[in-house]
Amino acid sequence: MFSSFQSQSQNQMLQSRRQYHVELGAREKSLLEEDPALKRFKSHKKSVNRLKRVGDVLTIAVVAGCCYEIYVRAGMREEARKQA
Image (cartoon, rainbow, N blue to C red):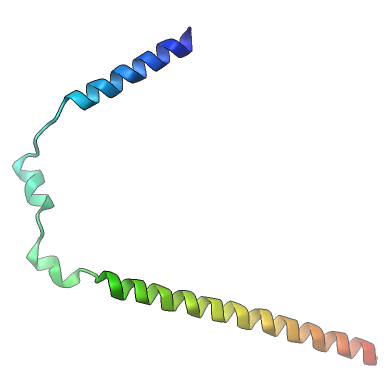
């Protein structure tokens, strides 16, 4: 019984939200317009993606180097144990 009441109230809320359309005011429209003063600070998508890719490659290289260093040191320690 409660679940049917809940689903009916949700349907009514969704329908009531869809029925109303409020036009944007002057302030909202001015805030959504492109500001020419901020244009020089706008990041370019291609260069940002390229920079992210370079960062990812460097991160992978550093992690791989650390893993290799750990592997080499473990191997050297094992060799030292066998000789001792």
